[in-house]
Image (cartoon, rainbow, N blue to C red):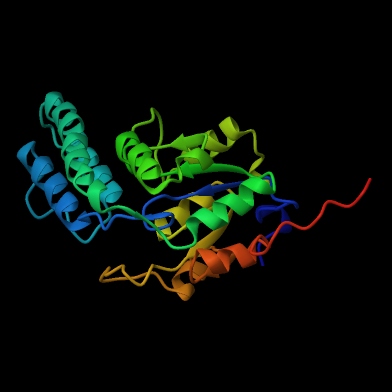
Length: 250
């Protein structure tokens, strides 16, 4: 067994909850396959050897691999700068196409309302752009619940870097051992566990047609403290599924 002090220590009660956005709170069915293909096309256009990048990898892995190859290949430095400038614009454009079909995930509004009424601070940590995130939250009526949001448009590290979550928690003034991160992907679990923040996984909505859907076993292997099949079950996990209990007289 690892030494006790190498394990994260979580304190009660929780003070804040950070949510992933797409797939967790809203359903937009992004064309991630097209996004990955476009990033690879742009990377190869600027010097990455064809065949070195795989559309089976998540976008952040494709970008990291492309950066490393462009930086170490002896290609002109401008190639890396042009890649960094071009690929986000293409992703943003494809992402924006999903806004008209973006809907709230069932159970999101009632869960967020219950958490807000009980005094939890709520935040969103997403790899979506600021434009998409703000408009998706506004379109689904969830915007007022989230005074704190960090997107891929923010300067500095992005999810799954633990620093991205730590920066958001610092803004929320929530200690890492009093926070919870909720997400629907292993990238979210990786981010939380590396930041030593408690993580709960949410299984995919039935409308998700991903070829490799997340499962409870995959989440638990990735470090999840609990897994819920949907947001209604998550509310029960967090003990906010029913009406507010009266505050004891002091």
